[in-house]
Image 1 (cartoon, rainbow, N blue to C red):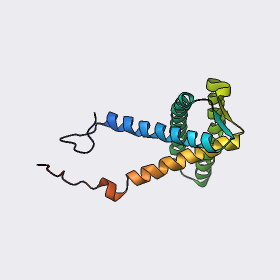
Image 2: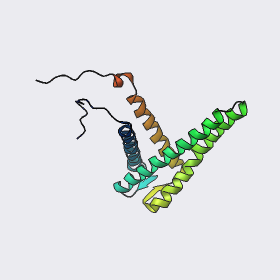
Image 3: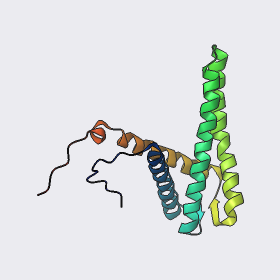
Image 4: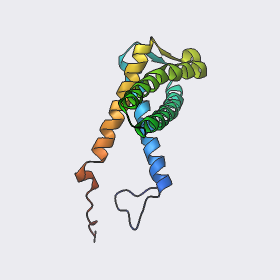
Length: 156
């Protein structure tokens, strides 16, 4: 098992970091989805197993959306002028907002009646909650006191 308490000469590789990052993101999606299922009748998922798959697909689609948005934003950012600044912000909004309809469509095609959001506003609320929680966890992880290292104590 992974030794987190006493990592003797342990370094985490790039692939391991990516794995842990996406594992955490999928678990956050899973938790938020199931909290909404538990406490809001507007979100219905038939089973925990389906919510695991939904969280996985949701994370993939959110990451693809962010990659597309960043590529388009960088394109307009590299060009001078106020029109390009406007186009950068407008296309970012259009991609981020419009992608929610595509993601909702994919979820509907894949899961049908097993995953239901009463309307698109409910779905957007779930997505906003997921993104805010991910940002919060990432911010917590990046706090200075989390990055400080100390030598492990010897146990005799």
